Amino acid sequence: MTDAAIVERVLRGEVDAFGLIVARYHGQCRRYAERVLRDAADAEEAVQTAFVRAYDALGRYREQDRFGAWLFRILVTECRSTLSRRSRRDRRFVAGSADEIDGLAAPSGDGALRESVERAIARLDPKLREAFLLRHLEELSYDEMHTITGAGVSALKMRVKRACEALRAYLEGEL
Amino acid sequence: MNSDDELDPQIAQAMRAIRSDQPPSDATVARVMERVRARPVPRRSMVHLAAWQRAGLVLAAAAAAIAIVVWNRAPDRAPAAPPSAPANVREVRFTLDAPNVSRVAVAGDFSNWRPVELRREADGERWTVTLPIRAGRYTYAFVVDGSRWVTDPVAPVAPDADFGTTGSVLVVEGAGGAT
Image (cartoon, rainbow over all chains, first blue to last red; front, side, top):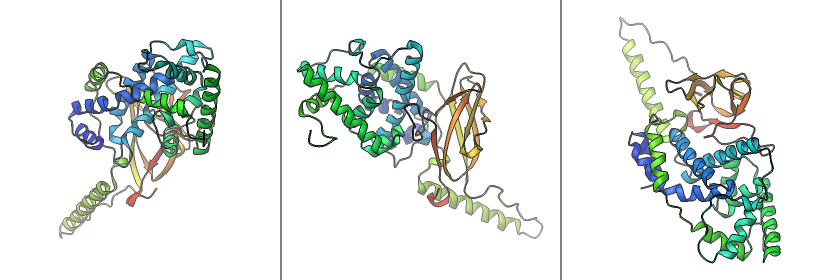
């Protein structure tokens, strides 16, 4: 069943059909939120809140929009809000605190390279990390990223470029 | 790296491994569904109907208007009053979930940035207002307790000057999809 068909069912009152949306996009949303927020509990809360906001706004979803990108716009906004609340609460600069990744499950597979990349991503400036994850984790187009973030395509390309350069430099030091 | 956008092979390999992660979803699905079942069923917004749906409603409205005129042309009936809303004006509903606040307003290009108060709904957390807005593209934001500006969490963001976004974008389409 397509996302649009599920949305129509929910708008007709079949509320439980929304669970299909949650199950379909939970992994992708959680994966992104954990790496942006670097805290499993915050990521889980942000993902749940994003789904609830998406539910409330389903009446505004347009079929010509890709549902995943539409949902991600809500998730990105929620993650930004979480970071903003966290910075006001903590009153300290948290970028580069790779050792403070809290609550993330240990990755499986040949972990050494992946762990190094994860650490490098965690050290990125928040703007660069957001752009890098949207481009190279979620594989969104620059047009979709522009719609989601509000930043211009040129600015987004520059952020992704700088993120890639920063990751390369970090890994050259690590490996 | 061959281009600005292309990843080093090692980083690309790590990203593929990260993408293959599938955190279990059952607990999240259950918690989200518990929250949404307690909320009102969302309604389709007129602004965001597909073009064919709007066309269908316009035709239905036109047919109803013709029926009213024909009916009122019977000798003993006065002509029906014309519709008061211009064709390119749409009813737009603004909603913000904001518990534990005293006031919520919305301000944007459509109001010359004068705040328009929202009404708190019975659940005590949701604030809403419906405004007639002419077709066009607008930037807007909510104002909480008279001083705190917040963007609409479910709307596209306006181009940002820095990491803190400045507003949300509203597109109101007129007849035939024109803005």
